[in-house]
Length: 125
Image (cartoon, rainbow, N blue to C red; front, side, top):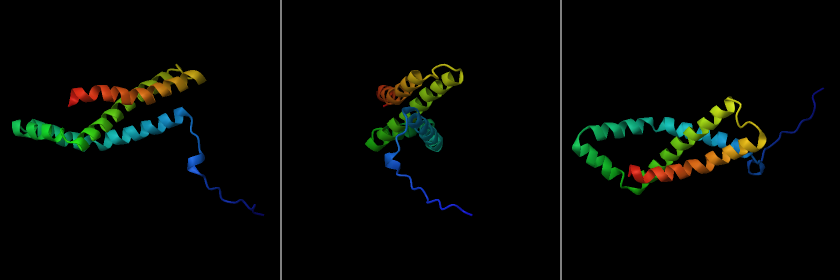
């Protein structure tokens, strides 16, 4: 006889992920953003290397606010992916696996990546 099991509907707003879970999701998102930005990076590199006029066009492009925001998003993705990758490497080496350390390292990555991206942004503009 089949049991009467009602379907379960998850309320996503009520799920509380640990900080390491949020970091893991953000790591995947940053990797996807980096992968999707490859054609744009190749096009910009081609434009810059096409000559003096191409360089001027690229420089003018980077003066636009939406492009600057996209550049910050790219820098965040790059820094987050780098820092989270280093964190995961340490975890693979069995360093920082215990409860207080893995939470602290997750917070360092989550807060450090945007700060490093902000620090690098002026040098690129």
